[in-house]
Length: 431
Image (spheres, helix red, strand yellow):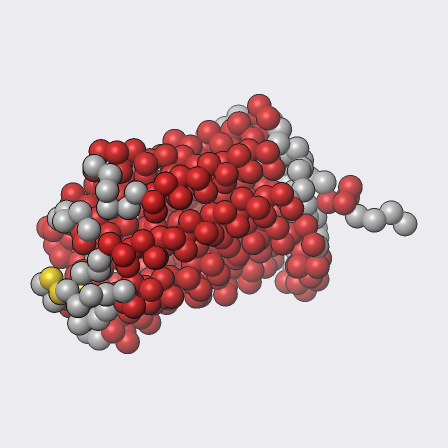
């Protein structure tokens, strides 16, 4: 991985290089949570159940998870500019097809395309950050990139609800599709893989070399604790984003916009906590494991409180609890540097991709089943053509999330402390 020269590091050009792909990641993250806001609209339009909405939401994560490691390989072999442009174009086309979908089959296919294109966005953005910023800044840049994603999640709550109110859910997704295609065009015109004069990576210069290197990452036993931790953490985050708005509507009787406004709590907290967590980990603590364990322990406790008080807290207190959960959820921005720093430095794209794959595999495997949990506890109530789930159904569903946060905390005990530096050579057995 090339380190920028001092002149490049001082130039705002590096921020432009990062900002363009970060905008594509913003849109990709927006799509993750969007089905929760339009869940009732989808039930009404297509006559489907909560289980179907859960499977539709998960369809984004199937190609995202499957392409995560291949996307890292392609980024390492061919560079982020071309791969990000192609991914943005596919994601934009998927959003447009989703907006026009006449049947559930087309809707699912479009959602699949969105996930396929979005799979390149996070790894591509952090790959750009690794090339244009100093190594000591990577933890902060990874957290800042994640923060952009959380802003995308925030946009998929109240702003999306307002847009849906103006132009309908189809019009909203058409607008997002056009914006995505514009972002892909900007990427090909503006973004460059590395600073002028910086040498090309040697170990990742062709696909065969990167494939060989990927085997090193996958065989490294230190890769798997961050992978499994993110599996648990993003399973929780993905299901919370999907079901918190329906919960607020069904149990608390809120309208779409009011429910979406309360759902902003977690994303707003992450906007604050994610970059602070990365900055504190990088510059002040020079540690990864200790803050991860502390934050996941807090998250586990908060989820237990959330499930125990479900349906009983006044709305202001519920907003505060969701905000606190968001602060603790920032733990997952540490899994990417932890995975990167126990693997060969020239395989940063693959290492981050493997860890990231864990999270989206978790979301892909859990959203449908948790939707099925809701269906199993459905009492038969229907409002405006959409199922209304009782408190007991949401309690069972969210209890699964609480259990996963506890597992994520325990996995932190298996993670190697890197002190913010690459320790791959230290971890290798001696001759």
